[in-house]
Length: 290
Image (cartoon, rainbow, N blue to C red):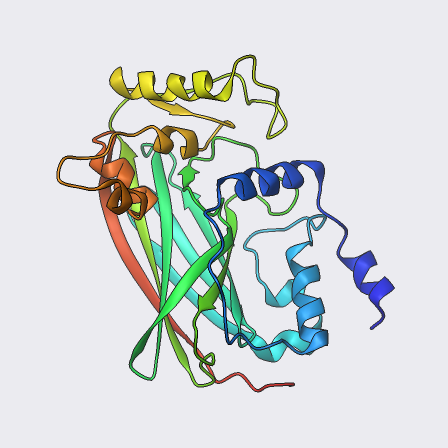
């Protein structure tokens, strides 16, 4: 397959996705030094990059990675098809693409009609040969915050409603594992305990100009917390609200900074964790140069 054919099949990012991408970059912590990472075979690396940029494809029903990649990459896909339900939602973990360096995971979350609002965070961990691996979710699922059910923002043109993708890397100073890897995807389901409001200034997306200095803008979220309210930005995110949460007694600033976002929201008393569940799957040994 020629590069021109791939580019035609996988069009570039839409303006909305560019906004989301830029917003995510603004909030990411400084990059960690990654040593000892292998270089992917060129064809596979190119295919993955184009897969991540595939924003113009309309998805029907449940998103599957296998249906959206060139058949040459099919051997790298692990079918999972795991179902979980609780009183708020139905979750289907569809499949995963492990390339020997990074994993792309597709799943579907649907809100139950009449159930209360919930805010869902995924956490991905992995183990190989009895050793815990350092897994970092690099993009997808808004990366640093959760997803609301029911959705507060209309789905972008990358995925249809309720479909989600998580992209993650294994961080290591040693050679990456070449054997089977056992993955655990843990979902933290939070319920808001305080009224949820959305500030109006970023409704137009990432490039919305603020009518005030950013320091003054962030004070809106600090005041909302003091007023026992949850204030969202960009229509559905708690990133700015999270930034202004007070450090709990007994914790240092460094400890608080390293606390996962879902836990910070629960410790703030603005949310309660109402469910936590984990699903497990295994990706088989990656054959280099396949």
